[in-house]
Length: 470
Image (cartoon, rainbow, N blue to C red; front, side, top):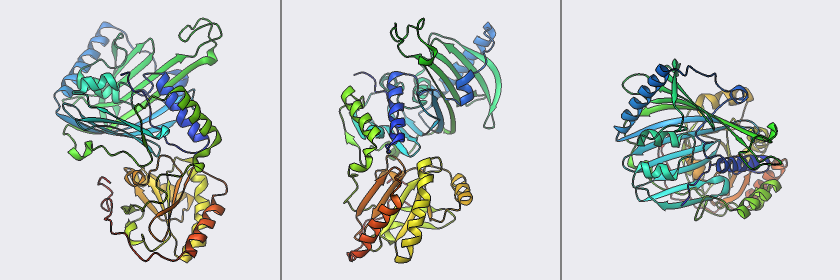
């Protein structure tokens, strides 16, 4: 079976869907896109060349050998990572957040976020689960027996995964045909690191490895360049290709919270997210991609019923910004509820927020409960945004995206309306200019319905700290 090459992207209406699918296409076209990272300045100029002396190469080899020996001695590990992806084929940067857990011989969990859309890579020892929310699909494969076998199947699945598997299995990092050189010592997030650089035919790769007894990988930069076919040549024939046909991509990835102990076994539990359909492969056919692009161009996300509509709403408990706890079970079966899933980086969410606030001001006196649920962001960042924007909605924090997964959130803004019987009545995905009118009419109709008079008996999904698995 050929390797699955994809990046999980949020499914949202209009332009954001097209951006999501563009990233998927880039991942398929460029096998190494997802292990790099960068900023606009890096895309424009790249990193400076280093000293290619024999000593510089020997120093780099020594550092890499120590790192491979260290990682090879670990029974398991945990880490977090944030990557910024840029490409000439994308408008702006895309941020990817990862949580990684591994235990030998073949247990692996990579929880991936691109904004609010999560894509998981999970191997529980028997099955391998891969999801691609951009295409609303997932697949289950037989589990490879070792990390080495896994690396052959998933070399570029998510940012940094090929690098991690390279360390765990002793493979070369980057272009195996090019040597690394040692550029010197630099500080990364308070850690003194060796800066190593490799220049190869496909671009450049820089890694920063912590100095000392635990040579953790702290940062990775990969800048890659590919060429689209020119008028008189195939892909890769650059003599007659115009410079505008060059596709340049880069990824800058930071690794934090390393631990040399395996995560809890529950980390490797396979649980497909709501709204994803099982498929034989994540690799889309040409016809499937054409259909998806037609749908993205038409912005038809609202035309398809969301899988959660008509189902009982899931109770949960989350930390509330500013203190306290949001416990949805106190309202289910009694109140009309609006859950607005959002993030500070999401421009459509920011535009839609005042519309939701206007509706809240109108219907809150009638007993409608509103919560703005921020997905996968830190408390300080959300608090600063809420303070600067004077947001009046009650904000709940979902730092791991677990409640978002419960409600099948594959892209934001995502608004869920729950009726008095405790069932999901309406779901709106993406920004729409008439949201205030549409949402107001829906709430007015739901308030006119009699209360069902029962409260669901389900227990909350996780504790107030938001740390449990849904």
